[in-house]
Image (cartoon, rainbow, N blue to C red; front, side, top):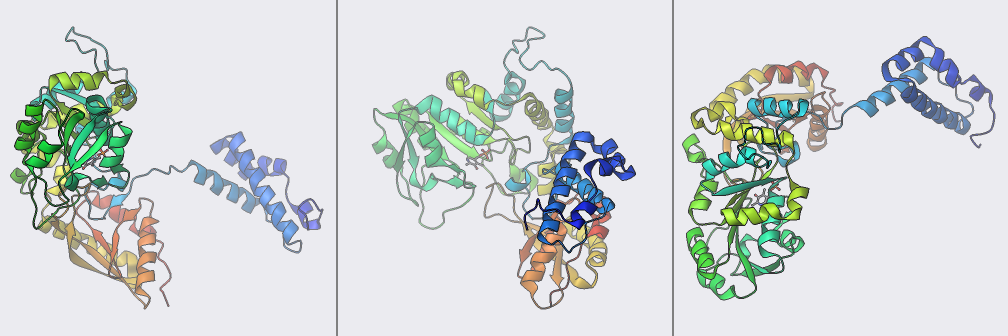
Length: 474
Ligand SMILES: *Cc1c(COP(=O)(O)O)cnc(C)c1O
């Protein structure tokens, strides 16, 4: 029966006006405004009419339930889709969870820049600060040993801008073993093509020699490029050209060497008991003309891309019209400036820089945390699953040190019942359904919550009673 047909039940459906003028309707209007309530009530009434037209024998819904449905619909619309989660994935710099957390100093600086006018490109004191990058350039020079620095939206933009400025319509020589893909959307060959450069691969996947580079350099060479193979390693019969040797070859032929460092640590991670990751200072010292790296990986700051290197080349990069399209906004610039200043006190970084704080947490500290979390987690899953403390191996993430793992601890939740795999999925979904979703991972039928990144214990425990447990699998 078409929706326009009259029926007794449709007549029983309250009118829009009656709903709006009811006490509950007025409360909704007070809370959400007239327009939103009318829009949603119309939708709810339309849905009811279609339902009744399809099933004329059924009863029209009561006004109270129509208004409740309207309220739920408005709340769903207004609920932010981007929201905080608990990262129990075991990956510290998780790209899909937003990578590095801002240090408190960076949060304060960012808030200040958001709420008030700032001297972003305004020379207050005659110190020639008419250029936005000047707020971080001195610190980047200090921390990397480079002559100059530019900041852009992310490292992909940094690589693009460097290539486009220095080697457009020319060949860029790269070892075959370094044509990496980072997270699907960043692939060296693709970025090179979009920057207008011609990729010239040399060597083989596992071995590239100095003579391969020498042989490929010619009139059309725009640059040599080195890419830090941050998310995989090649083992066995391998050879690559040392950075200093590559730099010497580039210098001899008068072409720049661009080094895409990826993570680009600013200090020696070994000083903090972690595996070595190449630093920007080392890359500059080895002779790279341009070094690019991310701000929100191991550096522990906001999403941005840093380009450091030779003064003349940086000046050209700064003049590229695309710099304007890729530039950093005042909020992230303020945050980055604050983060770089934290590096003035390397002895305090394991406290002040969340990324380093989380990476340097010891397995025994995390195991003690897991022991504290066991009783509330056991209680929350009740008889639907059993909980136990387990050893974990955290990853740094974001491509850093792909084979290194950090000893950690967590809670394993083993669902009761038979169909373990489906039950573990349901359990994981229940934890993701919490007000602050808890993100774990499933391993052999168990939901594993690696607690390395859990700092807000009270917030974590406080919401557990809201865990909507799935029915036990039959
Ligand atoms: C992460 C990474 C990139 C991409 O950096 P984004 O900041 O994510 O744009 C490029 N190159 C290397 C080597 C990387 O590790």
